Image (cartoon, rainbow, N blue to C red):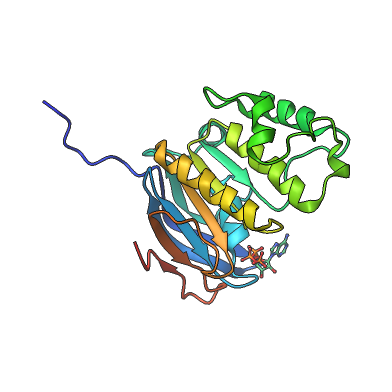
Length: 222
Ligand SMILES: Nc1ncnc2c1ncn2[C@@H]1O[C@H](COP(=O)(O)OP(=O)(O)OP(=O)(O)O)[C@@H](O)[C@H]1O
């Protein structure tokens, strides 16, 4: 007998709430993201987008609520295996070269099957920068190096905080192609943005954060 139960969402949050100094930042939030979907997290400056991604990644502790990955509680080891976080402060080392940084991060987080560290730099437009120290790279080039590390990650769930920041048009298209490929391969992505002007052209749900005034809106569109 085939199993007719619907697949579990890749990520599900229930009653997720976060406050700072007794001031609510967001929540309670209920939302889910299926494999093959992107969730666009919208909101103005200070609305809580980065905070939400950091809570989901386990870098900050929620006041209340639960996060499940594939139907299982998102404990630290499961988060580390299932999630890749692209944030404002990429975990890159200033004194290592581009290639050394990638090798270091692949050692920490693992390598997506079929990928080669050396090829990833070419995919993100950094061929020829293998031996450049990170501190010699521009902000956009550093972002591209972070994208290379994302591309090499075996994680199914991408948490992308303002992935388009510092990128030129070609870089924006690169992000969109990467997200599309990730979704096609059965993964999912959460993407924060200040507005609707930049979003991956994929099946997208939306979560609008209102900055702690209780008007957060989950899944306004699907
Ligand atoms: N380390 C911190 N300590 C205290 N307050 C913080 C800290 N980081 C963020 N905040 C506050 O939490 C709220 C949410 O900030 P957050 O960075 O999540 O917003 P955001 O939506 O990502 O904003 P932006 O679009 O400007 O990046 C803001 O009011 C901000 O001032």
